[in-house]
Image (cartoon, rainbow, N blue to C red; front, top):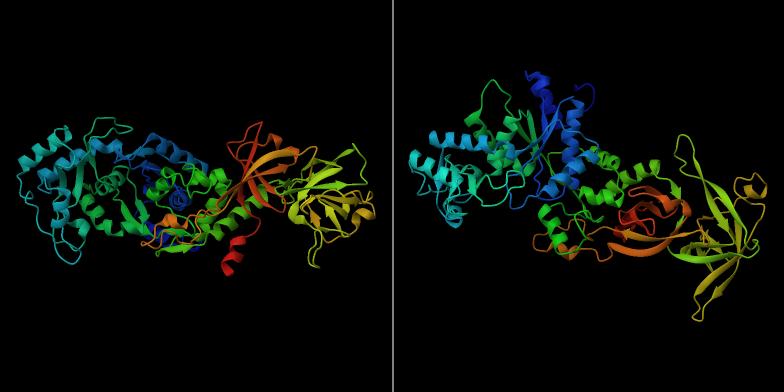
Length: 560
């Protein structure tokens, strides 16, 4: 890549400058470093697309490294889910790595820090350490254990490793400066005691490295050239570099940490802690609930990997945090599904339509195109009969002049079928319409080439044949939060903004071609929106999730 080829973002410019200043292109290596303590979300998707995209652009390897340094919150389930998500997004990693791969080396380096009098065992309580650390405007004070001898520190640290002490009795701290302006440099903790089973190392370790210690050193061990992270890690960069200074060999690549801004998505939360809260408190069904901002939830809802990648590329990389309207993601979803989703007919709010002059017992199989966006058009056969379902909203007994669907005395075309004319209605004892009776123009069959088939009518409506229709459970999903920034006001619990209308489950009827649809198959229900087959579907029960509507209805709501 070169600056002449395209306009570079600031991350790419950093890499280009390093290459110009002598970094060999074959030394480029990137990484995506998730913590296996939850499922990945849309924010992670942007980071995945950034790092793996750089790998593609520069023909450089990208590691997938799990930051598994906190066994109390980590599970193999999360590791497996993360791998599945990265692969589903279309990316391949060079090496699958774990911070736990380096536990022995990290421990050995910590021992060297003690020997160089650059680390010590502190036996204060966490409360005392917090007080002793000072404030951003006042310096800290030295721990009373800061002057322990090297020999005592080595002995205590060894015994910490051997499991002789309870959690919270001791920590290992770097000896930097308690007067540093950067609070993170005031003798940060390197190791803490945790008697917890690790999903990979079992019970081998009783002490675990802190993120700041493990992350940069893991980058170094893997010879990562550029370690890109979000802006909240900017204050950590000084510590990242200090730790590297203690072990850096000039013959090797020195990793460079640089930061980019989070691109938050409106009407969502992307804190793993809060997503876990939604799951545990049963506001949603699971991590992959289609209302969740998790990659697995979006996949289950029917959002495609292509749409997510296009969204990440569209919003790009920035230096300032901002809120991206979810309607942009919806646009990317529609743009992709419009190209790949077959058009089918489904009726979600049915009312019975009887064609009175259509022969009893007759059925026809009509030809319908699958997707007008296809390069080579394909078709399917759709059954037609005397009694149909249409959408209740597509009929009005008395309509205004701008209502171009079915009403009494007017004509509309049934998609792929005939022109019909509303004649009368049947009502129940409460005056509700239960049936619509109409007549059809026998010569108006779509595609027949007759003069009548070429007649222009203002409305076209979809339908399904009652005799052939397949019943389906349809889950109508909407935004999980009513507020565009549910996490923005720290005085208000984000759950106060949960949308009570985020899920409606209804019974609909679909054309029989969908009987054999498989999990995650995408469809456009004509005139209704995009839907996909849920994993709960079976041969006995069809289940569809609404992915997104055909247009942005929230834009109109927000303008009112």
